[in-house]
Image 1 (cartoon, one colour):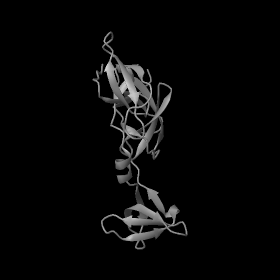
Image 2 (image 1 turned 60 degrees about the horizontal axis):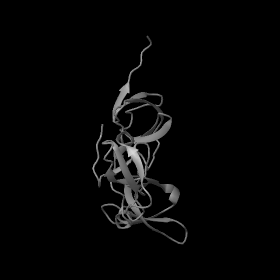
Image 3 (image 1 turned 90 degrees about the vertical axis):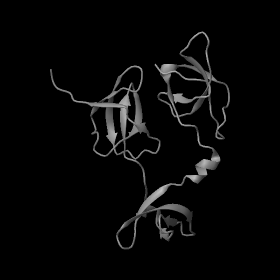
Image 4 (image 1 turned 120 degrees about the vertical axis):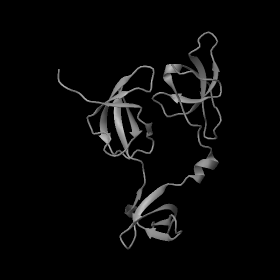
Amino acid sequence: MSSFSPGDIVKKRYGNKVAKVIRQEPYRSDYYYCRYYNSKGQPKGAGWYAYAKELVPAEPPESPETSMAIKTLYSFKKEDGTTAYGTHIGTNSSNDYLIEEKGTGDIHVLNPGDVEEVLPYTFSASMDGKETHYVCKPDAVKKGDYLLYTNGSTPMIAIVTAVDTKNKGARAKFNGKRLVLEDI
């Protein structure tokens, strides 16, 4: 069973909102009082209680200053047919994207349909009635695969519902194994 300390950054096992552990309840060693973060990275509003098995460690929320520093990476085809990567730095009066190429600093004027956001390879799995996205290597799983999730206190079965989902909000790598099923 996981244990947390005041100040630890957590989220609910199947949630996306980041929270901070405020205190551990004295009468239950596995019961915690937590508060969600606001957009400025500070705890906000009334808190809530959760058991340790309902929580997982999380990364601290981005502050507005750091989130502005992270730019979306796009891929595009150059005139010579090679693939290049760059960031969107603006839009001109014709609604074309101005993309600054990584490494060279060259500016390319491209139709929004000619650029593709670079995203990790992700898959979607249904577990305990909830759909969750995970990052993985291409061809690591196939639609319909059964997976054994071992990150929690109780192992659970997940079913891969879609692959190459290109999901920005995907969780980290799936913690578990792919199951091989045989008829009995």
